[in-house]
Structures are given as structure tokens and as C-alpha cells.
Image (cartoon, rainbow, N blue to C red; front, side, top):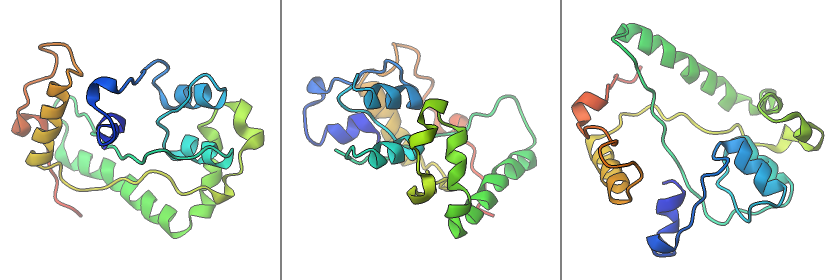
Length: 169
């Protein structure tokens, strides 16, 4: 679950005051580390750096992302595209220490000198499983209830038109 639903376990929704200024991950991290934000939703490398600097986790969250497909690509091309990160993830799982130094490629230069990626984890996981109709509908309903999008901007909510599933390989 992301930050808002996670916080709803502890406080009423009308008291949750999330700010999406500098909403991109590194913008949030920089505001937090620079003392311009009392808390931040971080994950992956920015989370590991904040932990390395002595900050602590207040609440744990998860998130899901989806891939968007434009037009009508060949389904076999889509399968090949997703096969690559699956194989890469397997290699990273076997020997993460071979790859954590690549985090520096993602970070603003100003942080490189203080980063010690040797103790960092391999990062976010890609979970290759179908996005079930139940999860889709629950997510859609939560987003609608919380008015995340302006009226009429949420999309159809039609699971069958919104998703493509491929069998695991």
C-alpha cells in the first residue's frame, strides 16, 4: 500500500496532509535530507541513503506500478521486453554486491561522496504476477473515493479494457 492508505491505519483521512511538491523521488529525498521536509516517502536507493545517514522509517509501505502500452504492439515483443528485467533480477538476486554501485548513476552528484552502497539492498522487486480484477476494482474504488483525479478524469474502470495478462514463463 502506498503512503495515504498506510497512514489511514493511524489517523483519519481528513488529517492526512501529504504534499506532492517536488513529488519525484529524488526531489523528495533532497528536501528531506536538506531539512526542508519533516518526513518523506522514499524507497530504493533514496531510502537506503536516508537510512545510512541515520534517518529512521516511520511506516512501511509498498506500491505497484503498471506498464502502459500504446497502439497494438505484437504480444511477443511485449513478452520479450519483460523477459529482460526478469533475467536481470535473477542475476542481481544471486550477487547483489556486484550491482549496488550502480545506484550512484541515479543520484545527483552532490551525494556521491557520502554514499556507501556496499551495505545497500538490491532495490525494488519486480513481481511478475497478474493484476487481478479484485485488486484493480479495489484500487479504482479507493482512488475514486479519495478524489485523486478530477471528475471525469479517472478512466472507464473497465478491467478487461485496461489490462493485459501474460502467462508466467
